Image 1 (cartoon, rainbow, N blue to C red):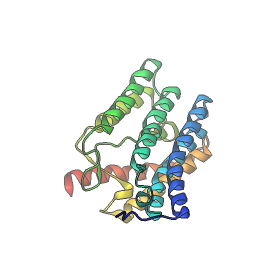
Image 2 (tube, one colour):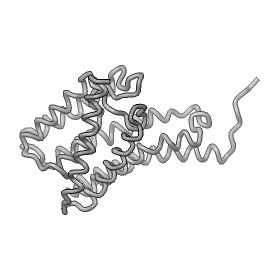
Image 3 (cartoon, helix red, strand yellow):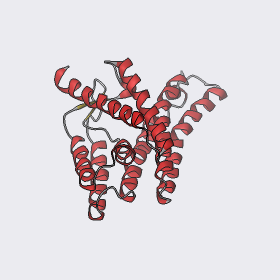
Image 4 (spheres, rainbow, N blue to C red):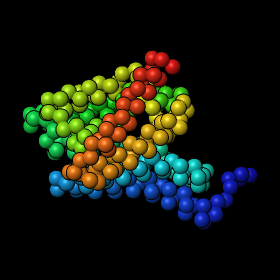
Length: 236
């Protein structure tokens, strides 16, 4: 006896639309590549932020329209992993390489660090812990590049140091907040996540004009995640 529910055309269409929406992150990533090639850092980062927003909300849509039940033969998580690795690792690595953030002799070695540690991190068992924390610094090189290009304007040697620093943090036994899965301080985490996204978008939109208030807000939001990592790992 077949107990499989027969879903309607509308339900299937909505489910496919969610997967297509998730996949559109790859199109936004490709547009970022074109902008990087044109040395348009502002447009490139706006496209990467579009990728971030798509990744942040597609899970909500998937649950809303019961995508797993309607399309059980489609694995949205696999689609997500493919797009995340492209938009959080490969494209930011290319951005870093082309943006001249370090001395030319360091461009390729630092880019190699970003790509290699990201690939190894994705292969780790327990990349996300049972209590829903990222174990080690997550593959979020788009954010690292954002702060280098749009916020801090550090000398090349310090940018190289931070590439190595965050690369090493991928394998540190530190619990980093998983914003969409946070259970402790959930409201506070959502608040700082929203503030951060607004700061990222507005700072990028107005670039190269800079507003110190926005930059300070972006720095404070990032510090919140650092403080939470310390709290979740050693104090909780």
